[in-house]
Length: 109
Image 1 (cartoon, rainbow, N blue to C red):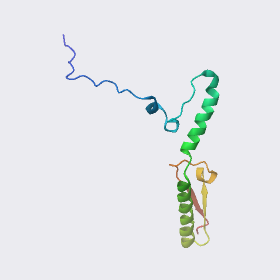
Image 2 (cartoon, one colour):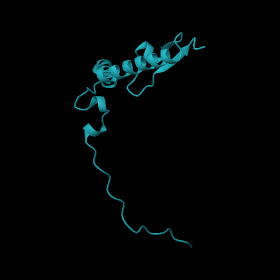
Image 3 (cartoon, rainbow, N blue to C red):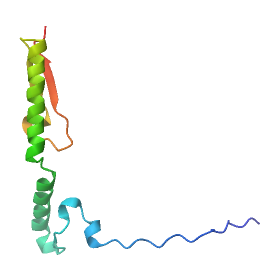
Image 4 (cartoon, rainbow, N blue to C red):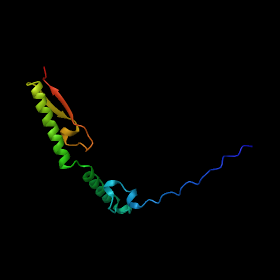
């Protein structure tokens, strides 16, 4: 009978993870209640914390505005009659920090 090969070394013990490390980035340093009675309010509070965490900073918004304005200027230099339009999440203000900026050039003949 073949025997299963023996391990040459022991696996390291599982790392103890603190409660702070287990939390989502927007929840670090916050204590959310675990009682059922407060669960709806705590979910509401965590959603507010998430929105604040994921919301683009003023610098990120300014960079996007500068990018769109730069693209509009270049578009007009190439096609004086053309118009650059933005659409998608940037146009609606629902973009995330990692989102792209959707643009289209029209009337560029």
